[in-house]
Length: 250
Image (cartoon, rainbow, N blue to C red; front, side):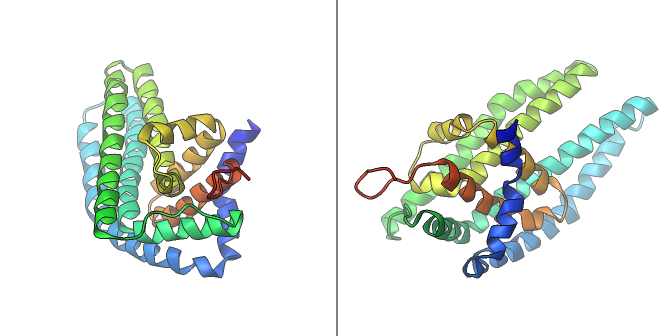
């Protein structure tokens, strides 16, 4: 339980850390401005359409059942919008987040694992890896999310189990997003990234749950993505050994 609570604490600890590191601010302010622009478009379109669709779906349901299902669907809608916002935010802000993560490792460990110089071939390779990473996350989502969705055919209990399964899947994907900068610099495979999350349970579950909550709250999530990216690197730095250039561990 203590490890889970420790994972929950990372965003708050990150805010204090950012406040003490003015050199990092420019790598956070610019992505926040980009998130605000993307978020305005998303919430002006998809949120309104989603709420109207939910109300139309439940129009003929019994009142008490409709109320319960409405709450679950609205929570799922916010989580879904948060997921979409993170997709855009992480991709658009990736040049800033990558450098932000490197600087944090330098501050905390004194050394950092950098990516290859930006030659055309390395840029193409990085782009390919990024696209494959997003594709693998989508496959992961569909492979586990489809059975979870089918649980909703069972009345009552099935809906609750399906919602819990979707939250667990969303927590895992959230961890993949926000742990990715330091893990990707080490060219880890998708399976190895999942392994990092599994090895650090239950702390990683607490981290993913609080970050999922932050990116699911309208308007707060516009500020939350850079904070969670920073928190993911802090989590990595605290819980991973430092490997020097000669391969030794510090």
